[in-house]
Picture 1 (cartoon, rainbow, N blue to C red):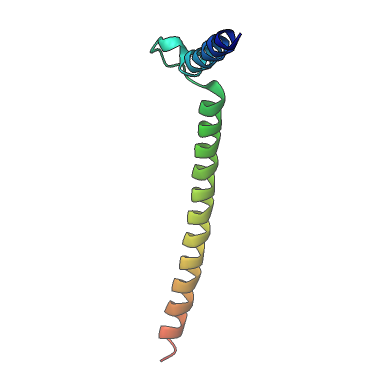
Picture 2 (cartoon, helix red, strand yellow):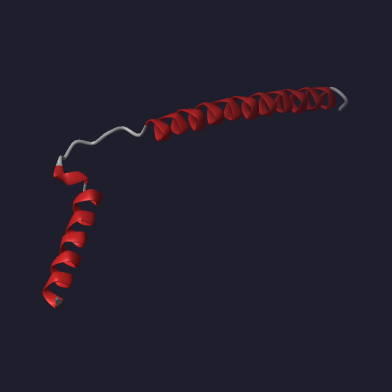
Length: 74
């Protein structure tokens, strides 16, 4: 009886190991959900970056115009 338990536990452990390792096929599959999430994050980051750059450019122009106006006052 003890041997049956040991063998069944060993078979179960081996089955979990094979399942976790993908049966040793060596082929990697692309995770479409992860790829879609990566593309979404990249596009969001690009749009946020362009928005920040636009605000920074307009602020720089405003500061430059104020600086040009005050330099004529001297």
